[in-house]
Length: 289
Image (cartoon, rainbow, N blue to C red; front, side):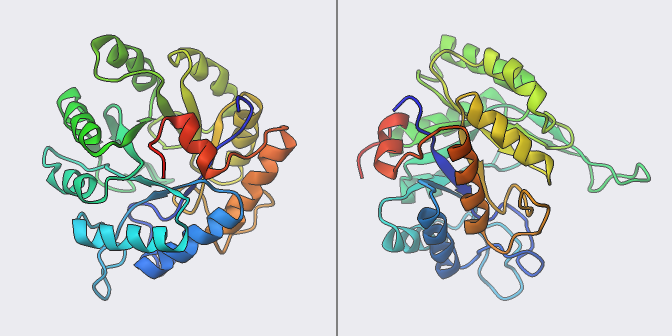
């Protein structure tokens, strides 16, 4: 299965406004979106969860019962699909994500593998939002890894900058992580690694041997060149409304399924067969369904 490519759909994101963009929020919407992604080639869905009260659908939730209801709806609709839960949270209090891991016991979960000053400026140089530190010290990473071990969850190491990519080898040497790893190169955040295909060979060269890797490409038209380079260089592929709203022709998408269908074309053009959920489980070392 060395040439097979795993397609992941990032269904919704942490703050994307459902009144402006077609992101799924309710359990029923998330299940329908997951089914559409699966039917167009995705084996994995990466999920964030939102408050369900009227007018609160843009705000994140760490309510384990709400998260479980969404995950159960997805699994009822698409039993084969792998769940990948977000754990990203600012600050030292990680009780919410830990409770969700314990309640759902997902196959995969994001492990934010280092800290980043999360910044963006407007055209006039003013801050698009107040500068914030997405803090992921080693103590926080260790706590998440222990929870993932207890829930039988495979960590997906999200790397926002080059130093975070290089840290993975140190985490392995220290025993925090065990090989083989599953890593995501997050490219396109304004204060992180740019969404440039020319960077990819250098980043991949810094990954530990035998790492399963994918690109999380954030942006507009530039993300599709990056996806093509990723497919050609042996990486797995991810897209969805968390990462982009735009199809390769520049049109705005109206669904996750259309984005995954285009990603499947990228894999086909690179000569990479698409992995089934069962094959993705075997490749990533995930427990059987």
